[in-house]
Length: 135
Length: 102
Length: 110
Image (cartoon, rainbow over all chains, first blue to last red; front, side):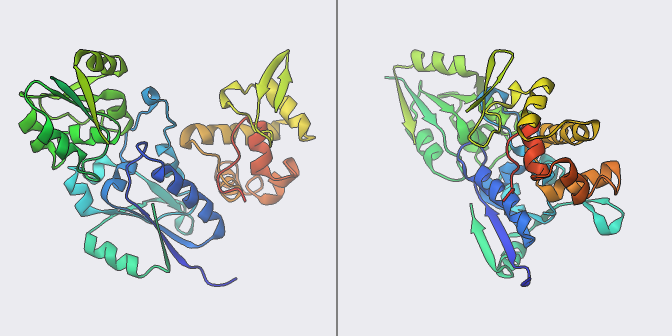
């Protein structure tokens, strides 16, 4: 098999108000089947996708936030959250869902998937990618 | 003529909140729904602009949308009133006209 | 398309997955399994129950790779293998078990 490519999914939209967040999540889950090097970046309103305590009972839409907690099972373990976007919105990492993955090579130890990075760091990570998909 | 200004886009993504705030005259109302509910959170950089408007203008937020986005535990900007769908209907009936800032 | 059970009609899509997952019952599962030519044993139920719990928590059905890994963790190496799961559900464990369990087709199932 050819060498795995580096894919980044760039998420910049809030959930529910438009379909971008859900569509991105679906493609991410499908991409896991191809065993590529997948990472997710959450920038601008995209960070709202990861906010904890989403309750959609009263708006008649499926609450898909639970699916982010399954990303670890799909071996998607690199979720970059941009620090500047968090700050503009008055959020901290504690406002986000505690997402983890279990490291098979380290006795299934739970490790955090979310990494807070500065805009500059994220720009660097983006440059290392083979493909960036924007949602 | 008292207008109910309805905003449904995130203030970070569009300038519809700014426009609504600028156009809302004394006695009118602003209702934040869908992605605009982020503007009702007391924590964002738009909180001051919303707060400055409260008083002359009544500002409402649609609570089901606020809850859906995980903001249930986050206090709204002082003076912003939460309404449910029934409250939404009452507002539309109460104001003379509505203006949606798409 | 639809299934008939005790005089009631239960809607499904063209592939046989239930349109409304809330209409699922254990009795219906037996009927769904029959359509797949599967006689449900306690081992089948273990997988179905597991998938339903997973769906309840994450709102998605796991892909086969994820199912194998999760079964391995919960029930040990023997049950956490492709071979074991394919013996129970010969036409694709994730697909068939989800259908019998009343869940949507697994995401990432290609």
